[in-house]
Length: 103
Image (cartoon, rainbow, N blue to C red; front, side, top):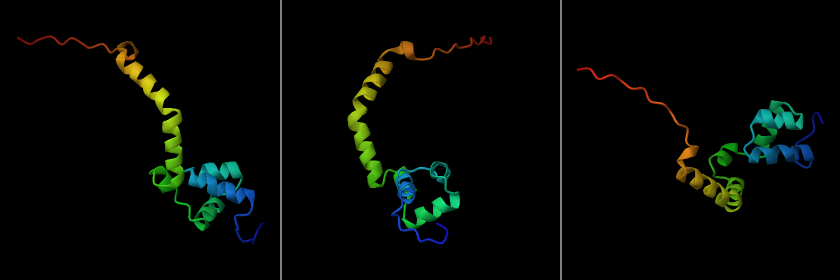
């Protein structure tokens, strides 16, 4: 593919864009797609992918995932956390040292 233009019609190029839009780091995308870091960054730049928008919750993908997570896993997480808050035996007990009073 040396010298070919990036048209995003190749599966590998599309995978780079999708993973980038999901907030993946360059190194992780490069390892998965067997591209170099520079090749990944080039493709993300050409596709105008802004990973920071995903990480800050500003992209459409991040909102869709957050909404899905809130609807599917939210109730069970809330139930588990509420049970832990109400039941103090789950809390880690720490010993306090007694300090002698100076008279």
